[in-house]
Image (cartoon, rainbow, N blue to C red):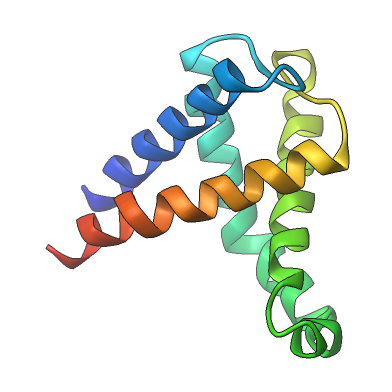
Length: 114
């Protein structure tokens, strides 16, 4: 149940980002739910591999490179979804990854604790 709530909150954050930024486009809330599902699958499978492969640079940057990895998984999600999810560039993906991480720290982690 917590996973489903987290998925819906991630979809809401993705949809809000698409409303706020012109370079971050989703075709609707249904696409946001699918994007959140794909992103959670990529975060569960691909992100740990990328984190291990880039461990030296992650240590050197004191963990800030993890935002780059999050931006890459976000761009991979957009690529997998095709025209229903478009990110114009890496900069907007990095900004979105930072905002998503902030929202997850504020909204989703308290849900997991209760």
